[in-house]
Length: 91
Image 1: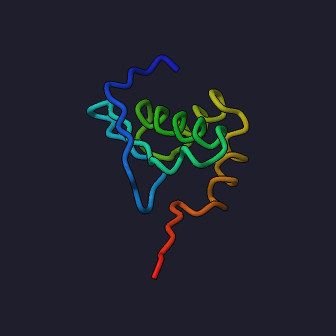
Image 2: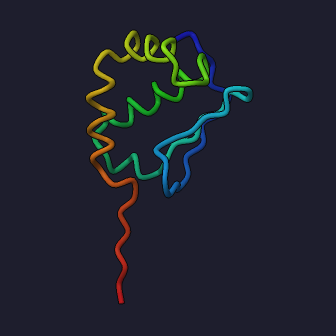
């Protein structure tokens, strides 16, 4: 992708699969991605790396995703069908 990621962070996140800080070159990934299919993790990594090249979800971003992960929309849809977090509450 010819993009440099300065730092990867992995942490518990309640509402997102990942995020990035384009100015700093940092990517943050949700720990719960480890419980999802590997293709979903790949999608999030490529998605966040694409944001380092294009911060918004504009046409350039879509073109980057199409180029680097042609079936990205399938993985996005699969991930969106899954809960972000699974918590068991025991009483």
